[in-house]
Length: 56
Image (cartoon, rainbow, N blue to C red):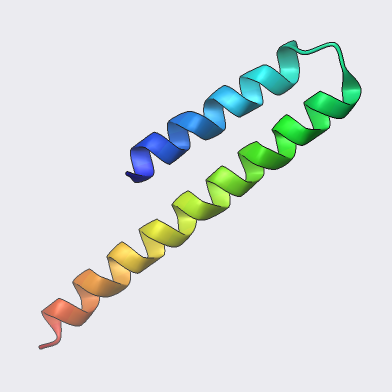
């Protein structure tokens, strides 16, 4: 799932660089940042879950 979100972030970044409309480009950059943040949260949760399982 995290991999899919990262892929969506890459697509949004690419769309931001390819579009001529500044407003749309800004929205795509913001969307890419949101996707990257979501992927980072999922990664932290996965690491925490693994760590908790090791300490049981």
